[in-house]
Image (cartoon, rainbow, N blue to C red; front, top):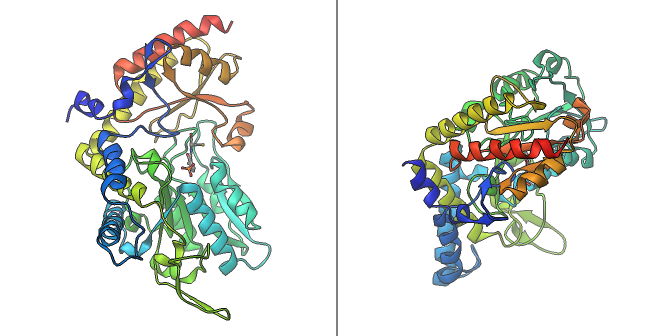
Length: 400
Ligand code: C6P
């Protein structure tokens, strides 16, 4: 599939913004959706809408089958051993909150510590604080590389879990999660991986990694908003108490006592977002049709090309220069506030994200208020990078 064929599948890319053709470089916030995903949502509500697992009628049976088929599809997509290990959630944030809440109730004893990286998203910081843990952050270098020696020194008898991202949404660093997991397991400590920024860019195999939990969001991988995944190793999920109570997660209910459903339904209380799950299945189809290698190669090329162009500009400082990096380019222009840069770029049709990107500890680490962040997806082109750099060249003099 060539890039024009890929782009033709994304109707939103034809949008005109302030008189310019949209150059969408905010893919780490959310990717755009191919027509097949948009059609899947319309088709679901036009022909299939029913509550699942409950009704005896044709639509309910068909919707249930389609929903459960996506569970098996996700299982194979990330290499899980069983579809019982795939729990549908609203997204990465809900997946991590689920684990934090249930894991703490099962395993916390008081004075509990969770090791996180210094480059975590707030979604992998705050749920642990809410659960009562003290956080022990792994420091990272100016380049944005985690200090694994310091990591080894963070373990204590109070360490209950390690929770780190696979790819940093702000620095683009691809973290050495296999090594991080092996070190934690040598201490008998389970590991949660925040995969929000990795599943759309790298081949993920949860069994090869050996992680205990892996979390991601549909909307960052060409799928709909409102759906995400929690992968949990079956033995681990079996140990955890339910997160929310309600329909579907029970086996039997009396006023005296409730028993819980088997996996994965124990963790799926209430009516799920059935159409969005079906849309997520189409998004995985899309990624597999294009090919994960093609996606990675295209994004790596764009990242390299854009980095070279930005390094040639006066007064531009890039944050995050790890040797293993993907898709994300964070930078500042002189002393200009990132919001000003982003607003001016928007006037020229270029969509980037500005601010702390829900990673305030990273900003504190560098002593900056935020960054401007360009992030790439498979439908972006070198021509768009040229438009972005040309726009920056127009913006920079306005900021002085
Ligand atoms: N990062 C960004 O622009 P949700 O919102 O639940 O889909 O994903 C949360 C999340 C968790 N971890 C990482 C590493 C993430 O990047 C995100 C979402 C977006 O960078 C929105 S702040």
